[in-house]
Length: 398
View (cartoon, rainbow, N blue to C red):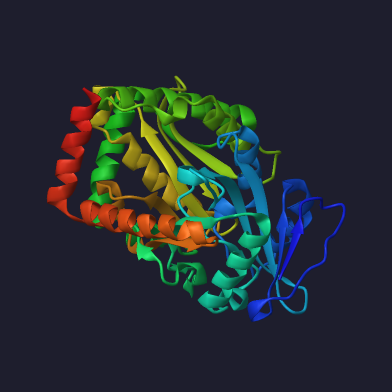
């Protein structure tokens, strides 16, 4: 059922398999680009911003997963139409070759790109069977899928079928066509009143402030420089290693935030700025497409004098209004629990973890993965166990 296209300039024969699906496995992003962009720009597509070609290309080019191979899996129906596209990295896990969706922990959602809602309606067992056969032909022992939404934009995700609840869910909100009405719905009257008071005091302290959206590579680089400094200070205070200090991660972000005038970057960055001095008080970055902003990170100036004005909350208020005004339909604040998410989000995006064994040797990995997911879920959902885990983590840092 698989056409293994290791050399895409020489098309190989496709073999029909279960569910009427035919698979192609591409080893080169550029060769899949035309098909990929056609799918993601089709109004019928069902996907997250993390599976945009530009996001994946920037990630792969940065070398974050050095030593792993890139594979693009495309599933076609009996009429030859591309129904599913899945960007993967394949690396060693002991003696096994394990495939994961491109993005690792830098992507909050690892859902496949579905050509349409009708394509996503395929039976879960057909999708699993197609993955198994494609993996066998490509020399993959197992697929490990993290952060699979149970539903996306109201549509069930067949790859989530049979998966286990993830340790944490994601949190988001729907946006309306009226920005002011959206802000009134998302932020309570009391919250808006407090934010206005804090903003007035912040202006008295620093002068006029403004919300900036990076529109050039230079503007994005300036915001990112402030973000890196703010995050480094925050992680140092917590005694945590700074993941953004990695040169490969910074290359990825620089590529993903750079864009030609008028084009939509893979990652959009925002900042709250003191107009006169240019001081960046808070930042927000997110993966974007035409319909959605997916929050990837946020930071704020750690100066204690500024903390009382809550610049991060002011920026979030501006961000929500900006996204609604620009026609995006949804905004999420990523995976994991946080107070600011609880106060603003009215949607819980349930996530599952899924392992699809391919080779006989991979069944032990699948079993171990399920045990680990259950344990992490129990710890994260129990305040007592989570507090104990955090205490143990702090002791290990000493």
